[in-house]
Image 1 (cartoon, protein in one colour):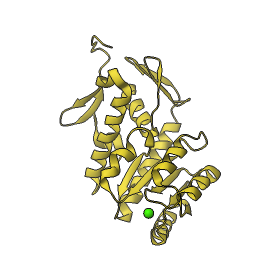
Image 2 (cartoon, rainbow, N blue to C red):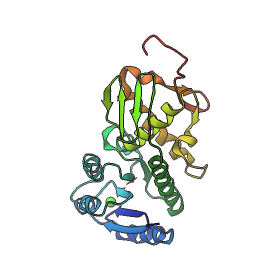
Image 3 (cartoon, rainbow, N blue to C red):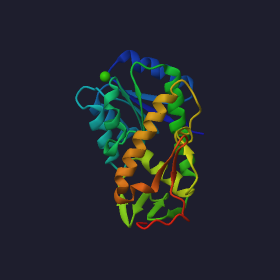
Length: 235
Ligand code: CA
């Protein structure tokens, strides 16, 4: 099987070295770029499976790189893990149209970061093996064409929001814990993961507009898609 490819976009040389060493050891092919513009070019040219993208970069910052990656059909499905030194940027990073799939705040430990990278890549692989269109209530998700609609209006979702919606719509009524939704085991970074999933859910609900109530909070567990038998007036 071909090695999965990871692009590291980071202007701190030491960090590139540490990450390249550790990810190569895990069997990944690792390439790198040291500014935003070079990173974007490498993403388009080399088509990595995942990008570790620093937020603060010379020439073009990480948010702009991410936005351009998401708006280009050649790169829009590449998973993006953002590195940030400022936790207050998190909502912006994982929410709405910025489109990062996950984030890690600096300084970070290498082992949990590698774990998060593996989880993101695994989610992508599972996704490729399913081909069908599913629907519940006013929402329809087409896995093959990567299109989600609500009341026949196309939803502009990040890859993570798309996978979340797919997971929900596939099993309406089933409660999912945040850990299940992140497809990861309990670890030292559990709190950060839970916060990430809440941010994704908030963004997804916002995009569902008047139908935001379809994603229900299940107290003490996490979230679920409204059961199909539970007919509400506005659905
Ligand atoms: Ca930096």
